[in-house]
Image 1 (tube, protein in one colour):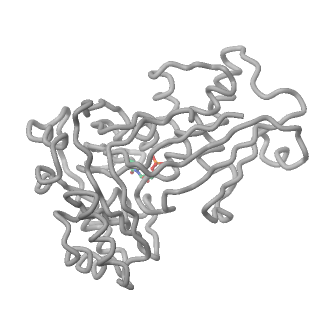
Image 2: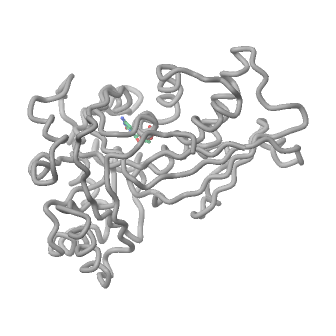
Length: 313
Ligand code: C5P
């Protein structure tokens, strides 16, 4: 039995280009991974009938969130395990022993449909755990290729730290150094989620895509590695206005969060989770307390970043 964990993320900077023919968007993104982690525990167990239904000897259980609406084969943990079983086949390495299934237990901590890459972190943790269980020992480059095929945020969750994502946000360059200071955030979730594809689609309808994106780190963006005060004014998310226009209560919540006294407020990914930047852990707790009674905000989580990469526990 192997357990691995992977961090969630926040996009400190998210610039979005016009969609390609497949409808995918080129991105310029600086990810900060967060100290809120998904855990994947994997093991082999004797097969009963259930996995025959989905054509692969993989069973996924999710704890801490209700994903019963999600088709089993769409769970990113399932897709991550399937990708590695296929990889093992290509390498001629025996994967799942006859008469057994690969059982995956996901313990979720990251809010679902919040723009914090919870599903991608499930995939990243599963990749690391299954790689170890099957004894594949894939190198970083191959793991990233497989991660990219699962979703644009999966490489960021594998990588940890603070990284620049180019291409579709999935070609990673790690930026943080051992002396990069911690940043404290209050992540504010909303009662109603937002679907990432729906936000990108509406973004296109609103004609907001940039015709040109930077192809390497912009000069001033190194400042993401400095303290919280230096982040103010740097934080930027092109999806923010679109998400605000789509969500019924996000605008009101935004005002309430600003009034709670953070240094800055930013939409997390495609939202609707809102990240409030604090100067310190104490400040983050104060903001959290001020939001405790706010009906517009479902829940608050104090987190810090950057975080450790996806790793075996
Ligand atoms: O890559 P991932 O599956 O996480 O993306 C979810 C959805 O977000 C995609 O199906 C696509 O609609 C949208 N997306 C996009 N451009 C990206 C990343 C995601 O349009 N670079």
